[in-house]
Image (tube, rainbow, N blue to C red):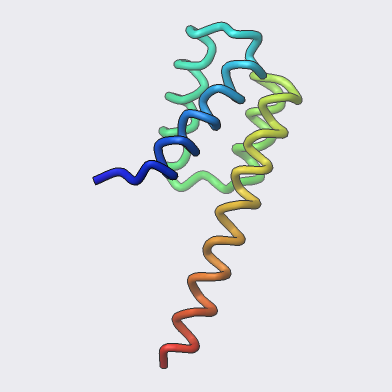
Length: 86
């Protein structure tokens, strides 16, 4: 089951993206497809960021940078907790 926090976070992320794309739903769908495919293929984050900036602009790029930073922080916390468990 999806938590309320995850749902709110997803809505906030999508709204931020939509705003960065000047409220263009088609561009949002295109970006989400691009991003999902890039992640699925394991494309390096730096390349994803460069492609995002070029194709979708700096506001969208900035949101994706923050997303990557947040995920890196979550991964660091997870890995540190795993070390403490051993």
